[in-house]
Length: 70
Image (cartoon, rainbow, N blue to C red):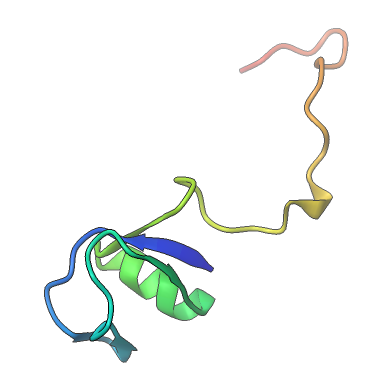
């Protein structure tokens, strides 16, 4: 999972080694490590959303007749 490091307050956090990383770097981490950094406020998802498999997303298009956005 790719995240952007938004702050770095130590070289190591909860087992995630950041010794070679700098604030602003894009990091490709395991889901666990990425979510650890995000939970601690040290990183953000690259697109602002959690990573997910987009292969199963429905195509965006007009809403079905009779349905309104809530």
